[in-house]
Length: 350
Image (cartoon, rainbow, N blue to C red; front, side, top):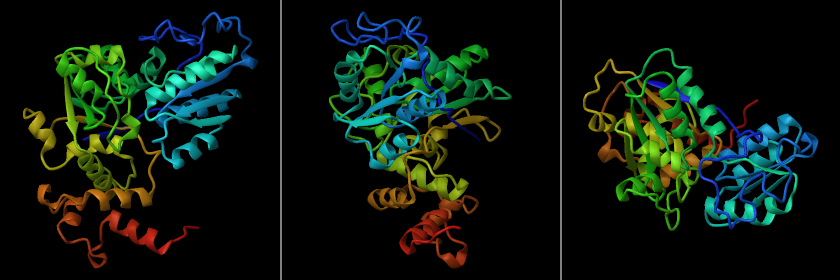
């Protein structure tokens, strides 16, 4: 099993063409609308970047803008936690605006109320852009050998499109790709079932980083390929993936990533791909650790439970031992149990 982390990428301001541009009626249909000079003529020192995001893409935009010495405004929905808002500010964002019940509403506000009124503004798409896909494609380009399958989560589809593009470039188009979503944020899955792009009425999953009510056109196109299988898990399974990864690998991730990890436990992956063997090489993209804290991990586990009844006992897997009543500190304990005690006792590390 190979775990790989997702690179932080942001779309370049030099390419104003996106795969699914907003409707012409939008006053800010693109970063190079008639209300603003093109990116080729705009003086670089006047550029102001704008991005909408559930959190992680906004963090990437702020990080990239800060590296370039340019201002960045990020608009996030009200579901984005204060922790992530603070991180975006700390990364160098000039301003973080919180509005709308979903990413789509936050994006509409950005285009209509902010970007359309700034002639020096450049829109940085959070997922639906060639440059974003190229950045995510480097995950595959860095692999030393061909995998048997790749597991990645899908929000708007930037990461997923990048993985598919990377596999194409390596000549590995036959590699199985499991596209993971959580129930309440499964816009890709519902689109594939219906045979056309659909928009969710609202996001009800706790995986707000996957909270795109509608995926991009390229995501939908890739999702229809025979090598791709759309998989939907419950929030409780995504949370299980988070705390079990903490136990087994000492890594803290948010549920949008935990949903990928969940497939590694209790026979889920084998059920989906029965042809896999112990020698099979599986790449699991560990794609989000920005919006997680020890307190949140404890809160999620308390809310959704340990799922003991669905846990396959295996003495060689630490998290399995932890869920079956053997997580006493005298036995060495689980990472999550120890983290819980640290939170409760307010330990300080020096």
